[in-house]
Image (cartoon, rainbow, N blue to C red):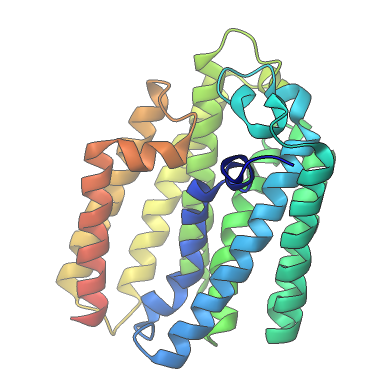
Length: 285
């Protein structure tokens, strides 16, 4: 049956932090402090957390043989046999069913987005993950869907620049991860698509996504006439520094697990916390 710890690990709670993006649109719009808006955004975040957990389980089931070839992924519960395939299937099915039924019942549009998210990840796992560069966009699209979900759930207007910032920043994180995987291992049996990349081509994606993120962020904050211009300008500088720090860590091969890096790198921690404080001040001050 598997221990409670193994069951918890298979749904990857550390990765749930990604779903905070669902709160992004109402936070940026300055409406998250309204009770009804917060509840709508929070419920949508819970539904997306269940959906993402179902995807993690499905991916672990699908990639078990490849994960066994990786030094850290080989410690996942399914690879170690701490959870059976049947148990994992049941956990994934429950997460999938609750999120989809809850999404369709609560807000039909949210349910459709969750269906798109599921379909996107199934297509990625079965086919797209083997196509160089295209696979990067598939992964980044999952982050974009999170930000869109928050906007739709709370009836918050989503600007092209906001969605672009999220999408390009996500592409940066994914390409940094791939660059670190490519440079950190001599053999890439655990992710065959890495054999189709070169360090130069991947870092070009990293550089382009950083430049694009900074450009779109500047457009996003300065087209918003309701925020404090001085604090918005400062937040742009901090946001840029955080992305450049991430690019530097990728260059040194330290970004194989971006979520872990977000929690463990002290300078990046400081920049992200400072950015959050400054931006919240710009919106709510």
